[in-house]
Length: 489
Image 1: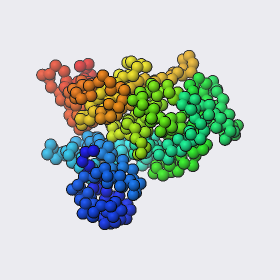
Image 2: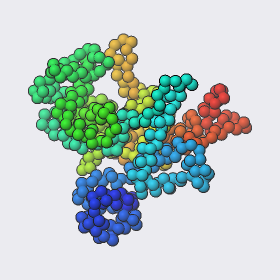
Image 3: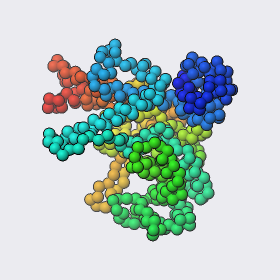
């Protein structure tokens, strides 16, 4: 463990509990002088002290992880890149340096999160203004711009992100239920159908055409759960498990959603659905059994899918949730995108995330997977800050159900920090130690610092185009420069 200075977070923990330094030192069996040095960042926070904090106060040690600091640093860099020229510094000597950003993220994380929240509200207000502007010059009858709350799905995504995509209460409950109901790997659908019938009087039937291409429709009064015909066994099990989550864990789902400090009923309802899906995944893939199987298979996604009777995406999603403090798996980042680059799922147990103010990187293997459908594509990638990751990506698709009905196709990617790569079967044959072997990717052109990138579409926010008549093409942003004057560079 590298030296970690967390004095501000330690002081905040003490203040939250209304304790003096002496009282906290006694509770942790430390000397008052040593605790004072920890709080003043004169000594690093050590693993034994972290374990004492966890034992005495029940605080998740993830609260003191540098992963959270890395997320804040990335977010703050985006905020500064998005500021209008002059606000982030009038010159090279006034600009906010990376060292100052690190100091803010490490020393005052609550202030950093507040800045990120303010920036998010600012972006949403600008988007609203832009939408109103597209209505034309005639503003008669247009109501004044209201305060715009955050979008529900973004709030819910941030809720799961802040918890490293691990909901301990639901994971523990699902594991108990799986044992009590006798769920077997790959055959959970049989026991789940029996549970629905015996405990709730609900029959499960297959229906060829559910409304809106739904996969599950529950008719409470009729005691009927309709499932889309053609679902595989693992998909049927997941849909039944989701319905059981609403029937048997409804109070827990509501309590967790209500305690998430979400701003609207829509966000809370969406959180309930997300939590029900989380319970379903944990029920079909019980924590301890799935983690043992994952480690034994070296996180081979296909082998795990065959063993538990579920698909590639379900395995990836479950792997990104294995962060129980007493038995952690590899901390993964899970993402799902379509061909247009729209991110429909993003879950993380790590510090990694892409920009919210620009598209993702075209050099990332999540897009290469579309050119090789059905094949798992590995990639060692390096971000501009020097962090390297191992990624695996593959396409997943679902038929529309008939001739002429559009289907769905996505690319699903699972990634982890390079220091965990040796635990994965996908690292075999890759040179993890050679920095030149890693593909240089970024968080999106608007915030990426790689000027020489051949795929750059436009300059970073706040930086002017470099237009030079003496060069063979407009550099370093050929695509943006060509689009600017209507030529094809």
